[in-house]
Amino acid sequence: MSSKTSSKTIYPHHSYLFLAILAVLLIPLIALVFFGAISVAFESVGFTPVTILLLLAATLLGSFINIPVGKLKANAPVVREETVSWFGVTYHIPQVEYGETATTVAVNVGGALIPTGICMYLLIKSAPSMILLCLIGVLAVAIVTHLVARPVKGVGITTPFFIPPIAAAVAAVILSPGHPITIAYVSGVLGTLVGADLWNLPKVPELGAPVASIGGAGTFDGVFLTGIVAVLLAGL
Image (cartoon, rainbow, N blue to C red):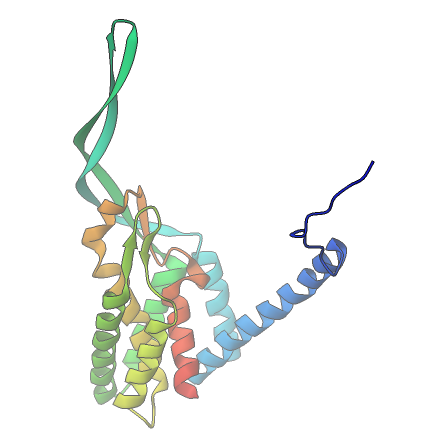
């Protein structure tokens, strides 16, 4: 009996056990780099190591908590089928009706409330002139983020991840070349919240999701990470 091997068959160079061991080793390394970058960013805006640890713990725990704040209603098309039998043949006739749907809007503690609280703390510590520059930065990032944000049915409001932090870093360096860090963080976090989430709230019911959580991915949400990346970019 002869056997044929497809020319398209690809054999891995390493065993699955080797790949599993490699993954076990790489995941902690990636985690260390990830949280190390967060620590550097938070240290840049004036937080102590103990405060950074508490903030990270609160963010991770808070990512599991969504606080409902309201409901948005919309009339959405609902497709129903009617059947008609004629001489033993059954016909399926789609009927489009419009029914009222409701989407619960919630705010995630780790992905939205804690980053916003950090922004408020930084603004309170800042000089009055710095507050004005931060607000200008927020407006600039919000406009850029809103221009690139796209509502995706079944997913939510999506934005290319790299654009908001780059916009925040550029705005911070232009507005305050000597002290861009605070402006970068505040502009990145609040600008993304306003431009991607709040500005697009009227479009949320059209996405067909029962719940829309602002900052719903917690530590891995775009709002949280945008502030971190913006600080790192501005620091460069």
